[in-house]
Length: 416
Ligand SMILES: *Cc1c(COP(=O)(O)O)cnc(C)c1O
Ligand SMILES: [Zn+2]
Image 1: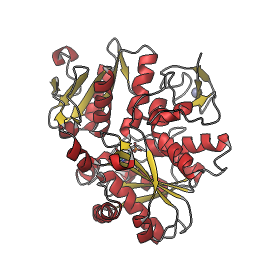
Image 2: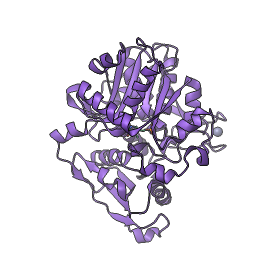
Image 3: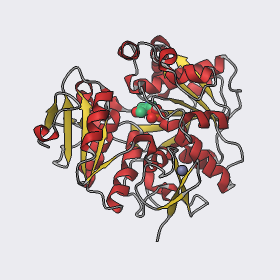
């Protein structure tokens, strides 16, 4: 007995419950259509609460989940009367128990569960850091095999709050290879028998998992917020918030207006910001990310440096921005650092660099009058609590099981 189907946003073709990333007719995104049209909260402490709109059969049992609270000190500083913080990270004083410290963990739980329920043996992904850590953690908890390909620069982000398990297969790429090389190698490994590609933004479990940040906010506030602030690299979080808003609107109890996406990137690497300024569906590399490699090296929040984001694809970020009359911001490193220390001192929790970019974008929005003081605002602090975590846990590094010299090397030589 299924709980949902997948529907192509371009041709309308429907697929029964399965782990599927693409339509057979075109390259559009698929979207989950749940048979439960009303959000019915389950009696689970974490993300499993939102089972109605997660593409898995069994309820997810974990205390890790999004939390939402109303800001006082930071809101006062900005002169806002309805500022809510969506926090994904570790902050036990506020019942936030995401021990890999970012909302990537909200993607990992449903993705791994869907893999298990659809008969997959092992999942393969490439990561610059946060995503790999989240999937490694869920692998350690569930024993489900995961193959994670990481460029050398991301290896230090692969720490865990527990001892690594043999189900985690970390493949390091030697220096000189970047995230794109990791993506290419992961794509080849995913074609081996028994391996399933994780799929990135095309993976509905990933999007609907991230969408729980919006769901948690809506049930906490009692309505869909007017504005949604987040820093984006791939834009998957923005797409997810949009899709969650649509489900909440269709539910009927949370208002009829979608949250306005107010998304940010970190200068100098801001391809989606550039394309959106001209309301273009396509990112033009020569215009929007000239000297991408150099720009990426100079970017403070490296998590936000995706060179092939799902922007123009049907159901991607461009469509989300159009539908919500969205705004994009370009934030400098200095603005981010200033916003980070302001937020941390007023709210009392440390935040990751991409979240500093999001906080800075809210400061810009207030200054430019893009929000009114009484509007209901959701600021997605998608990563934080790393310093707080280290007070409570000894972290272990995940050891690589193999090193790849280049993305095209023979897989037999990798010996994984
Ligand atoms: C991954 C990440 C982002 C960017 O997410 P998108 O996939 O672009 O939506 C922002 N903040 C944090 C903390 C992240 O880990
Ligand atoms: Zn289609």
